[in-house]
Length: 358
Image (tube, rainbow, N blue to C red):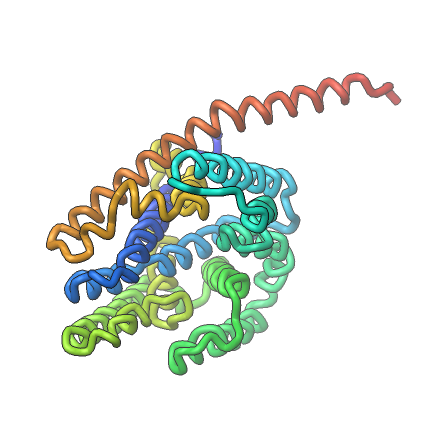
């Protein structure tokens, strides 16, 4: 762990932390937008700060940037992720009977909890696992000798998955797995373009992609925010250009990743240490059994829907959620996961020593 924290480029790890903060902000806002008492100003704010899809795009492109050379599935990585997932989903399912007033056992809910990976109890983990299983095959396409083929592949993905939905407001029959699959491919193409020394891959292009698309998103959100003041039914369109399928959001994140990949690497153990717990933070704060309890009972977001202090409440809530989830996941890792895998490693070594020598 210490070795890994030392060599990882902290520039990307900072972006990973920003990504999970964006996701927490978006989940906070989801609990306010459906409230009938929300003020017009706060509804506009909520739609402007629905940054979850941007956080997912950042996370997936970063993940591929580090997995680019991987040619096989690491079973240990999958086991570790699945154990972490089930630890939290079962723990919080049990706690929900203690914390949620009047909760009764429901066999259907129990089965969906046990088989949560197949019922999208945490859709990101399910979709990420599928992408990870396919990633060695995706990586084979994005090899130096296949640049021309990869370029054509990315044009098709961009048109079908991003441009068409951005224009039609439809999803073109694309599900969440394909969303992460496409985002992973953008990260793969980014790394391939860098490694193959493409002329267009430079700071000027990165800056243009970042600021032109950021400008388009800002202007669109500003216009829709103004329209929403008198046409509240159109408020949902404010966040259309920062949705998971938006070509402008994808190109903006792509440009940002380009610039970071060309920047001088920085190495910070504290940053890398914190970034290593982003998945745990996600699993804890977005747990299906207690999600409503967090926002409605603990943070009482509904009480701030018509308040001028909603933004301050948002900042404090996100900071508290991030910090507490980080502490919980650090405890899980060093009190449970590390001793468990050390014990397993010791058992493996013992069994190996007991085998008869050839």
